[in-house]
Image (cartoon, rainbow, N blue to C red; front, side):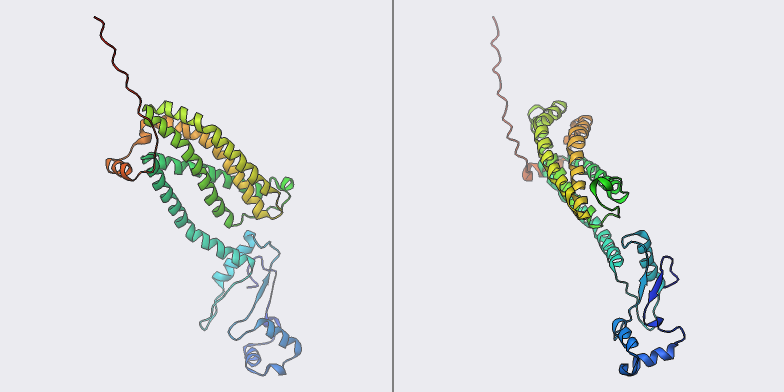
Length: 312
């Protein structure tokens, strides 16, 4: 373990005396501990158990740094124990690696579940298979932008003086929290916008006019709601804890981008380009939406004008 790059020194029961051999250690383990020198008794009590031996490796790298993580990975990969034993690595760096692996293994399942449920609910709302797909794809724009901003601010440390923090790697729980909250808020704004557009399209049958009217009717509501959320989230940036600071600023950036760029510009532009294909669905799914759909447009039937009497 002492030969691993980055390890400054190691300490364990085996560092007592380099002249001690296997036979000497067997006598220490199997003999009467009270016969050993006091300092040896203290060291054995702190580092040796019935089925475990504690060994410590010291490095000058920060706990969350790539160098410390490389040391942990090297210990786990290279150190073998005979007789059916195993190497267990503890410490904050090892815990971080285990948490990252846990999150990495399960995040695809969580993301897939959220996307599928969101797609299904939006289909029940709009009766389209295109709009839910568009909504999910565009939601990742806001989320991806917030992730990039967090790396630029907190990991690379470009605003460390302004926000009063020490640059460090992003905590693995932050992306998961941001994804969950931002995806929900973005979908909320999407429902507000698309519902108004859907109402106008059902009433007029004109996709271009429906997009313009829906944006006009819902734009102020989305902007106002987003402004409130951004203000609240920015307040978290005043926190002393870096994780809370990062979550608040990441949410504020994501909501601001989603409301000003994605919902106000990208969504209307994409729907304008798609035209009537926005509302397309296969016939079996249209039948399903007619019977199980969530939309209640409340569109009143336009009055029919009586034909003018012919002039004799």
